[in-house]
Image 1: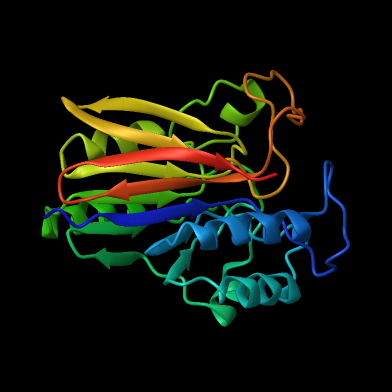
Image 2 (image 1 turned 30 degrees about the horizontal axis):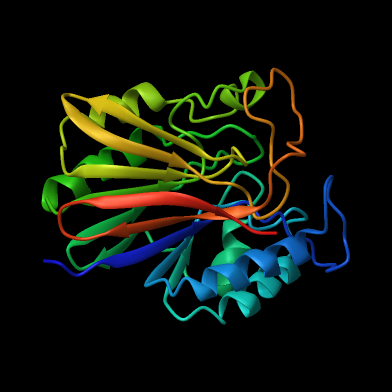
Length: 247
């Protein structure tokens, strides 16, 4: 079909219970509100929040996020990042593993390793993923917190998805996986990854809060870029995606 669906990815808001709290390069609650206002004007059909919603891991920070996200004109879904508390999230808004996007499926994978900055799917989650891909061959978009690729910043690549080789190996058997969206890296990223002759678009997203410097050896804030979000427009056969920044 010709019907175009618009999905927007937001990520890494690092909210505190205190709306005035500062991060390294701004006030997360204000940054969150500005990004959300811009997202609303894009008239999305679905919004995916790829983790690190909270910085202080409080119930109040998730309540704050949910209250604001209720202004969206569409359904929204979230996954836990390394900073998050899934139980507190689920108490506010469901943590789903799959969303039916009619012609597409959206799979939401948890890569959280409790108490650690890096991510891992683990063998049980990998088998479950294979099983779900086995059942349905509609074009599939996977959303996850940790990058399953090197983004080129040494310190960040050390805390990405640890079992990425097993993940890519699995995907090579399922050509219906077309796109992967990740958070965690606080920067734009777009590459195509070959898995058994299939071309998979792999996309990172600016954070709602501080941006991290691309290509940095050690942790560094990117003072030349702004908070933002990713837009994905797709129909049954193809997609277009780009980043928007918010002033």
